[in-house]
Length: 269
Image 1 (tube, rainbow, N blue to C red):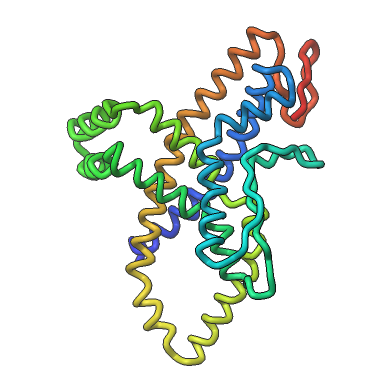
Image 2: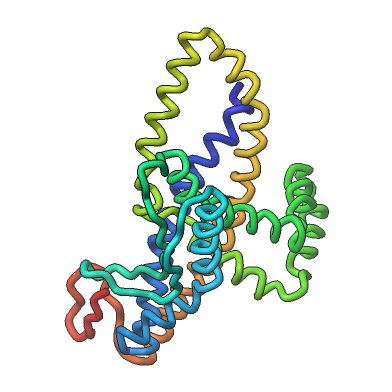
């Protein structure tokens, strides 16, 4: 039973880790952009360009899902905008919420970037980096196998390009607050459906029928999230190093929500 639940548990843990990592990366990536450009408008442009492939996939998945579900869409933008509260919106897709939209279709539209981002991460992982061989090497516990698998990964053609794409996609695929707007209503629908199944006495049959495919889906989610975490760690180290070097060269530092120490210039994001 514990082995069956492990994919679900790891996905929940990994999702939380990715949210925390994404918050740090977005904050410090914008901070590095401020240090390099020294102008707020240029910093937003630089910050948005770095994540542009992921932002494009995020908004395109919204648009495609809405269109597929028969929901009328409006404007599509990849131009960053600063909100009144100081936050930055890197892109958006307008769709029209009519009476017939409902929480299920709206939840699917909101969750589309996470599904599309996960699919692309898995595609890159399996087709480009050969993570299957790496996973088998890790499970074998043999150092020689692991070294050979890692060597194969680092020998990947255009590895820096693929790592960058993984970074941009994984840090733009998480649902925004607006994307999660219909999720509470969707959960209520699912709870209501579960109660109906309980009254009909078919709950156990449905759970048993869904357990294996659900474990498979969550297993793949776990692989994608694990890849995203590994890539994010590499880029967090790089971002921190660039921020430290540029800060020392320019003699300034970015202060994130705190008072600066004496003798430093304050740049508030």
